[in-house]
Image: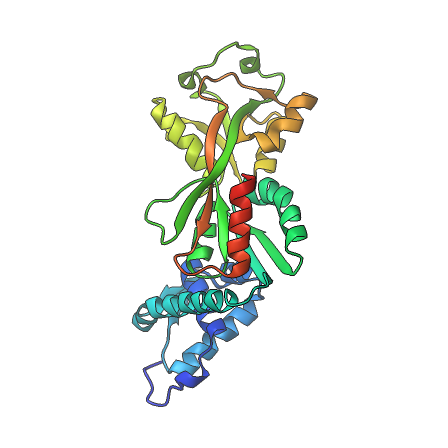
Amino acid sequence: MRPAQNGDWSLVNIAQLRTFVAVVEHASFSEAARALGLSQPAVTMQVQALEADLGVTLLDRRYRKVEVTEAGRTLLPHARKVMADVESARGELENLSDTVSGRLDIAASTTPGQYVLPRLLGGFLRAFPEVGVTLRVFDTSEVIERVEAGEAHLGMTGAEVPGARVVFEHLGNDDLVMVCPPGHEIATREKVMLADLVDEQFIVRESGSGTRMVAEDVLRRGGVDPAELRVVIELGTNEAVLSAVEGGMGIGIVSTWVAEKAIKLGTVSRVSVPEFPLERPLFLVLPRTTLTRAADALTDYLRREL
């Protein structure tokens, strides 16, 4: 589709731009639909409507791949700016009111999203009953993408990513522990060095996980190349890693929030490595725009509680 003279910008809306940005960032209509909480046909229709309104082709869908056209690359930074400006305006307008209300979309990585925030949000919602919260769990990379794109008001992760177009604020800490099946030989040792682990079978989180980023950094500092580990499986959650360890598949590294009960029950054993338990930070992920009153109230609450 070539640029048309009769493209009607007056028909373009924020939902179309948000959908377009999501498809570009995920390089997939289905993944964008999942991130936005929409059906794939709805995402396709939004993009098609945007292209029709502008009179250009933004995305090349041939060969089952999504590629951004020159027109799409031209529009992308402007679309992101429009979304950021809208969120900033919304925040400033809501700040004119004395009442803390409205909806909060929070994106969090696995441990903060499944353990930390659910335990804290109850107190916040009792203090601010007119606020509604939607909490979604993603890997660290996607949390940052959603905050950058204005799809989440704020986020929480277990790792800081250099170069991200967001603000990271250290809130508190989480401990990572190395665990193995209770009958594993390594569980009987009083002390295990990182170099001793190279020949062991490992269960790891997926690429992009904050747990994995921090654990790999510790291994490197201890002189162990993470690529040398015998990884038998990559899994998407800490619970899945823990279950695989309980099933005898190998050694895993998970948050103490996740492993605490299993260690007490004896379904897994702690590996006595000097570097573990490893303290890792928990970060608040904030946009570079004005926060809404509800988002500002939540950040203040989390600072006090953590």
